[in-house]
Length: 87
Image 1: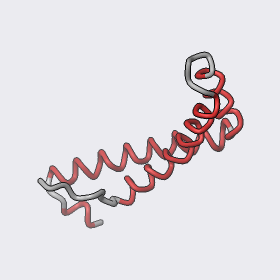
Image 2 (image 1 turned 45 degrees about the vertical axis):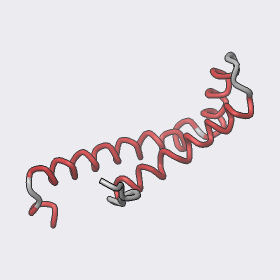
Image 3 (image 1 turned 90 degrees about the vertical axis):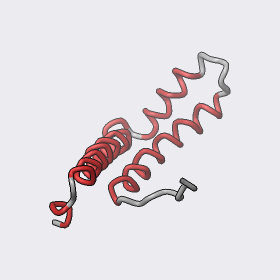
Image 4 (image 1 turned 90 degrees about the horizontal axis):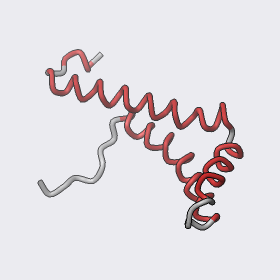
């Protein structure tokens, strides 16, 4: 319950991080649970195979999306910070 002691700015950032992380986790896991990996990869491949993009790149992109969304959501929800900038 430490977040109740936050000032307005930190409380707002906590709320945005929580809601965006929860939404991204839902979207990422729904691809695994509701659609299934094969259906999602097939859908992305079928849509992008009509373009100049090679098939293997489309399949790789679909798998990258399926893995990256839940991983990034967990990092956002955990509050981990990225590399510090020089500013």
